[in-house]
Image (cartoon, rainbow, N blue to C red; front, side, top):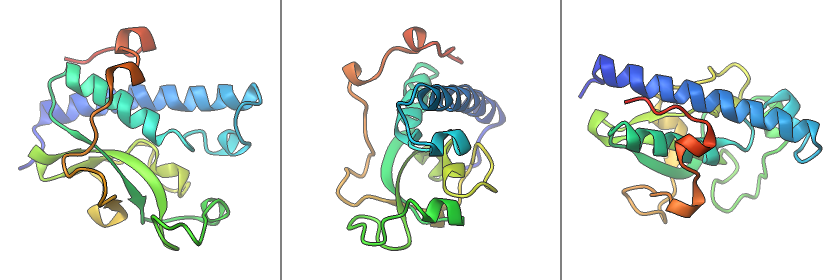
Length: 165
């Protein structure tokens, strides 16, 4: 099923807001010395899980069905990202890196990814829909994806996110 225009607009508005926040927070953590230097160059690095769960919470409020998926990024990787790749990674193997993203089963499994550029600087800041061949779900995680626990995520109001309904 094609993604209806209004749903696409709401999904992208949520994605942009969360993306801006994780980039801002990545830069702040770097300035405070709480995160690796990679955040200065690739501010979305390491933010895929937080971003996906914050997007999930906002999508729940907007009543848009989705799943948070944990797995491996197997798409393009530039030399910078390869420096951080563990070739002996038991989960993702030599060609992948651990990653988290959002999928929309009702839209033929369309993938939303706000942190793909941590792997390749030429990637757009928001990938929607992503190429399925770049994403490999973890087979151990339930097929329906993950549901964030209430205490693990602050409400969108407390986190500073605007809820798009």
